[in-house]
Image (cartoon, rainbow, N blue to C red; front, side, top):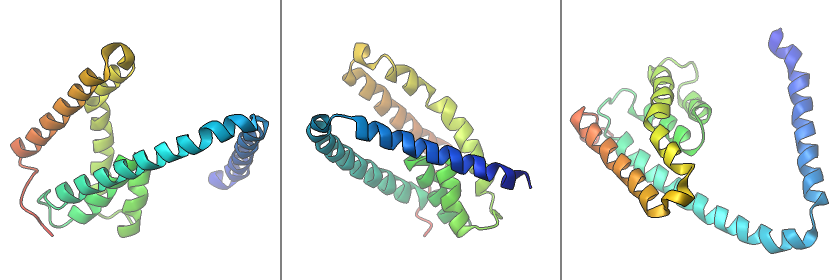
Length: 164
């Protein structure tokens, strides 16, 4: 009952957001759009393609090696959704293969989201003053973090032989 009473409000807010976006685009100068829209779309598309492929390759490789044969596919899909979007995206992909959320992956994904906040916090602190720090030092922090995470996977025996 409560959800149905809020639905018209959510639809109205959605339409207002779309109208606001359309108004901003229509009000913009055509020369500005001609000058920057195509290059920005091209750069965003190429970078998005690279990120999705790196994420998919990483998740597919490590997802098959988590060692839990029972739920490794569900875990892999949920983590891929989280890496390419948000935890909600991961839950949506998990819902496709586990419609009733009977697997423990739902709980693991929630804990993963909370731990990701603390594990990625230092990268956020380095990202804000990035122009002053420089791209080389920022990339070094990200690379060191990735190496530490891979070592922790081996130390805690989460990186095992291929399951499927």
